[in-house]
Length: 181
Image (cartoon, rainbow, N blue to C red; front, side, top):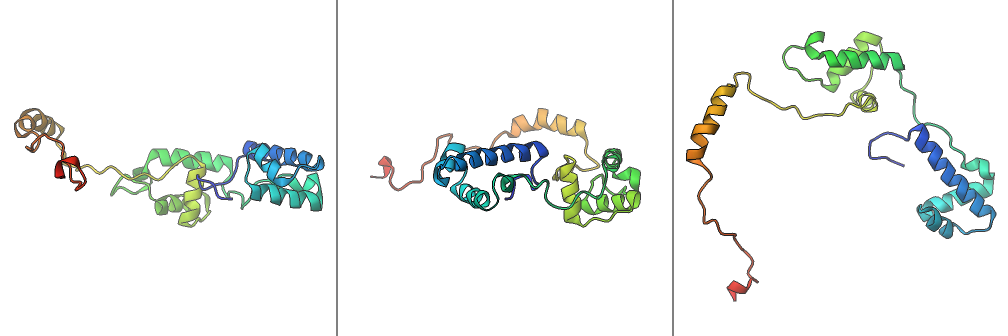
């Protein structure tokens, strides 16, 4: 199953889903059919039938959680905490002075430099997501931006120029309007 956040379930979420499967096992033991189990537990029929087949072949134990899936993170919690600190310092603190943006490639190079662990860009994206970081579209502003000139223009020029002139009436383009008959 895929999840919207791109990752798996937390331990608490896995335990909650396991409890639901165990409720289904109790119902199967009482002779309740999979469609009725699906309705009562508010799960898909496909899940109810899959759980029923697993329960029939291996009993209640077959519905137990198998734990977290996938490979474990190659950085331990201390390394992840240090990475977070280094990211907070910014790219310039690590030699990237051309702009102040963290890219996946830069973060991957930083991780390799600090911890000797190499990641693909996709892998680095997953690590950052797990840490609570998300990709952002940078907000570009000119380096020569003059805030006082902008404020002055907004205050003095914009009221004179104003909005483009128009009829002020709402338009209608449908051939089926009452006015076109």
